[in-house]
Amino acid sequence: MIDEKEILSASADSLLDNSVQFEVDVMNPKWWERIAIKFGWLPAKKTFNIRPTTLGNMIRISKLLLSINVDSYRQSGSPLDASYQVYDAHGRVLAEVIATAISNSKRGPTNKLVDFIQDNLSAAELLSLVSIVLKKLDVMNFMTTIISIRGMSLLNPGGTIASGEPLEGL
Image (cartoon, rainbow, N blue to C red; front, side):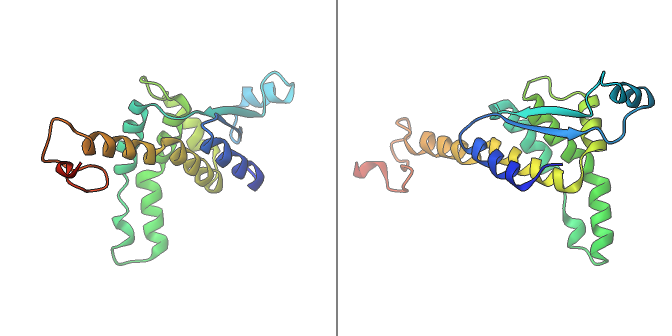
């Protein structure tokens, strides 16, 4: 389980572009894994790292996050029913988001990793890890890059700079 100090430390590491390491308890080991854990042949926890994401991974994770539809909460009915519908419809997507951030490669995560995350993380751990993943996406630097490119375009003399001023005034 992830405690508050680890979350704060992970947030600081995330801001400094360091890799964030976390452990997940193996909650549902298979019978042979239980025996191996008991004898010390397999660890009872798995360790993962989340590094700053690549541009390709930023796009993959953004697509996954955009696929989550929270309209269930806007419809009439019980908030509890809406929560269950969102769990059912998008629980695996959140596991894929975390697995994609862990793998941080063009190949993407394996189904085995996504299944492990889905079967072994609590809701509190999921929230902590998703917040780390969102920090690692570094959306502000990406948006600043886009604004810089669009605002400083020398090919578009009638354009604007990042501050919104016309280029002609420069």
